[in-house]
Image (cartoon, rainbow, N blue to C red; front, side, top):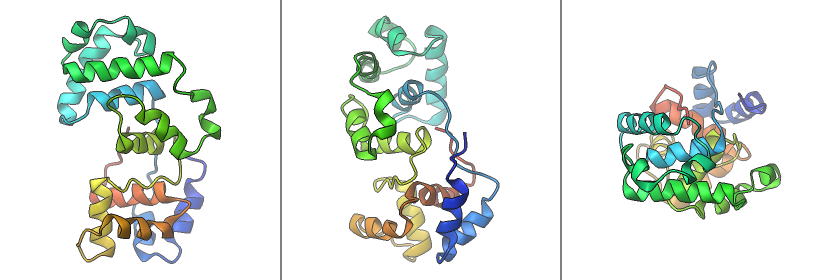
Length: 205
C-alpha cells in the first residue's frame, strides 16, 4: 500500500530544497510501502536486532516453520526452549513473549491507533521489552505510514543529512532536529528520500 499523501509530500518537499528536488526526481518510480501485520512486523524487528539480515532471515524462517501462524496466541503457547531452538537468544525469546502478552492483553490498542499521536503509540510500543524508540519510529514509518516521523538516532539519516547539508560533518542532535523542521509535516518522506540517497534499494520493513 502506497501512502495517499506521497505525491503531495514529494512535491512540497521539492519546492525550495534543491537536494530534495533532486532526490524526488531520481526516485520518482519508488515510494514507501507498508507490508505485513503489526504483530508480525514487530516480532520480526525483535528477531533481527543486532544480527545480520542473513542471520535474521534464517532465524525467522525456522521460527515460521515452528509457528506457521505468527500471532500472539501461538507465541504464548510455545515454550521458551522451542523458541530458542529456532535460533533466538534467551533474551529475544523473552522479548517475543512480552510482545505477545501486550497484544493479547489489550495493552496495545490497535483499534485506537488511528486517533493516537505518534508519541502515544511510541509510548505503548516501548513499554514492550526489547522495543526501543528507534524500533517504534521505524514501525511508525514503515508499517503505519505515519508521515511526520523524524528518527534522530538513525545513523543513515544522520549520514545523509551530513552529506547533503553539512559538508560531510555529522550535525549535533539539536542541529539535526532543527534542520528537520523545514520538512514538516512530511519528515518521514524526507527521511525516506535521504535513506535512498545512500542506498537506492528501498527498505521493506
